[in-house]
Image 1 (cartoon, rainbow, N blue to C red):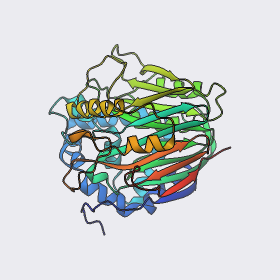
Image 2 (tube, rainbow, N blue to C red; image 1 turned 180 degrees about the horizontal axis):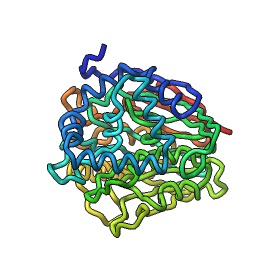
Image 3 (cartoon, helix red, strand yellow; image 1 turned 120 degrees about the vertical axis):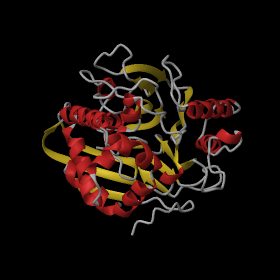
Length: 387
């Protein structure tokens, strides 16, 4: 039974291993985590108070439909996957698609200020040393997402090539928010791709383009660096909203990490605006929820204030050289209102850190924490997938 109650932090990370077609894998996610997904839909204030009322208006329905058609043209397999989630969980598809549209709807309508209740954080630390290659990531989200996530390890085999990049096989693991497609948080695939995503709240959003969540879902199928850039550039359509992607491929002979800031094209070009930063061996990098290099307006003042605060906190540390350094930094609670590890002990706190993942490329493992990594041991250490 779905209660619509927010529980205190649970010390649990559910993991689902599934294989099949896109629809079957989606259905397994929905069926397995149905009560969690239903509960999340009852708790999601943004969905209930902002997205659903706008969806009921003629203009809102039009924006919804034109964006859905655009995604169906490029990535019909991921729409089938999401239909599978909806059917498996026995919830309405349009509610799940609205979650993936995020702020594209209110922003395109310009009818009201975007929800104040926006997720204001996730921090990524990259360490690229010869003997220590790490990607550490905190996942911060609205308090209603606390305990409403799961880990999926999926192997998808299609009989025919799928979507604009003709993908036949995918094998990945991904942390998913309840009812959401894989690919948006912290992720890894059998081609050796490891990546994390930082949401960025751009002022300029475009309807009828590809929502970031579907571009990062497509990124889960890529097999090399050029592939990854091609997916993010999304030639012919382009991103509808903004984010930053931190990634590397284990087998990359250059041993390069990348941070890519992606935004809708300000010139209305039919491709995403990308800013690519290389992080070579011997370097480190931090990225949070703001543009560091793209000069575009940002919409969420709280998210920007939080980003500035977290970057200042990281600046007080020596450059990280070990997993212990990264755990301490991602568990830091010194930043006042906008600290790196967000807990503040109350169920009323709007944003909480719901999980932390640390990919160790040398040990080929991913460690998952559902509590502060500077004070606790990981819940699980999963081996990275390989072809």
